[in-house]
Amino acid sequence: MLSTSHAPQVTRVPPAAPAPSGAHELAEWLIPEGELRPESVEAVTVLPSFASKMRECERVCQTLYSGIAHEIQDALVLRRLRQMVNTVLLNPLWRERLRGAGITDAPRTYEEWQRVPLSDKDVQRDFFMESRPGMVVPLTRGDFEIVASGGTSGGRPLEIVYALRELRDTYEIAGRFMGAHQLAPHLAGADPKWLFTTLADYQMWSSGTMVGGVLQQVPGVNYVGAGPVTAPVLEHMFSYRGPKALMGISAGIAILAELGAGMRQEYRDSFRVALYGSGVLPQRKRVELKALYPNLAILSYFAATQAETVGLQLDAESPCLSAVPGLHFIEVVDEDGRQVAEGEEGELVVTRLHAHETPLLRLKLGDRMVHRPRTEGPALRTRQFEFAGRTGDVLHINDSQYSAVRAYAVLRDELKAAEVVDLDAVAHDVQFVNHREAKRIQLYASVDDVLGLTYRADTVLGPYGLQRLFVNALPRALSLFNHGEANAASFEATGYTFQLTFVPRPSAEIERTAVGKVPLVRDRG
Image 1: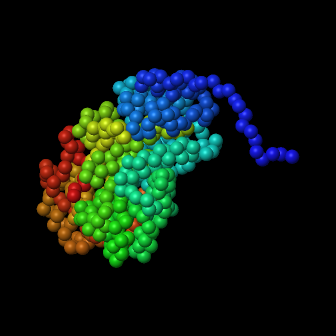
Image 2: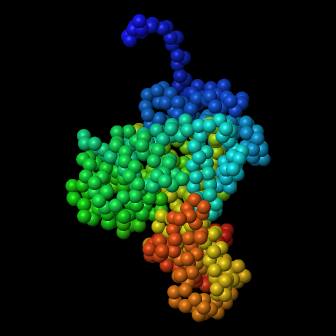
């Protein structure tokens, strides 16, 4: 007969070797030489996770990773980056790419790391779509997740691959940080605490997968994946006892002023944090929200399909975004891929640190940032940056994103078919200007005959013809995964208008960079 109780067996465990005290020595102890240089693809599949290294670092330092000294964080991250380079050198496509940049071994310093070539969306597409030749561990092994986005910058869809074991780690790391440093100051007291999202779960991209995965891992809150809500549903959610936070796209946050207009005051008082994850939240909407929900803090949750939590705004009075320590290695670089100085603007580059099977080195996300000073603790030591705009040619109209390249091609063809103008033939430069507050898209074209072309456009199209042309053409600028998101009627409902403005060739109306280049898209307030 089997007994259901067992006396514990006494086992003698030899004492573990003490961890070294120096930052670089500790990093080498955490990621030893045998793990630093995996010898085969099979060896990669059994590498201990980077999350386990972070936990061990916490144990040795006797503090949460987000509070560990910068010197130790920097040493461990560099060691991990070296491990990643050694890992990708097992892959023929990566090996060829790095050798083309003169890299045959892992960099030993951050200075050497900056020789690793930057990756863009085309590299991501070539390495991780179709046959996915950039994966170190092949897809046939299983246990991966595919996440897709519309690829709005270039107008083509985009996919990325994650190992499920590491995805779970990153959700937990980001959720823990978000709870401790972004939500905890606002969700106080003994009552139950709530975290809602109105992101649509059916979308095959970051909204429905990665961000939702993070929110579910915030400790001590009750999570509700509500999806888009009506006023009665919002009131029902807000009737739950306890303080509440809600995350959504910017339009989903803005509309809460309208949806909550008839809500009981005690329910409105319980709304403490609004997190917007895309677009821009106009000042007018902020004022309306604060008037309706007097205890509300409005904060940015900056994410991307390739990085579930890039930066979190921790203080409503400061525009700075804080990186989640140990989640990604984040750089703000110049055109040569070198880190810019504090206070300078550059391009955001992200390397996901939790990616043994599917590394992607130094990916440009298509955003510009200002490099801000690090926070110095004691509870939080991390990198900071400030959003400065998109680098991609994207028209943001409310929360829909249209490829400006496609939009221009459609408009050019329509104007030519209507016998108004052949922009390719007459325009020296073209530039979309998105006046977001005024809800107006203006396409500037620098030409030689300003008066003649203006007269012809007015005569052929009449006062409303150009608007009709734009409204019907713009939905065709949506990429594959976003088709069905907008049509002519839904675009009309946004209240946006369109203008075609001819200007002389040297006109200051068209913005140029310091070296004389003309960006296709410029955003103005």
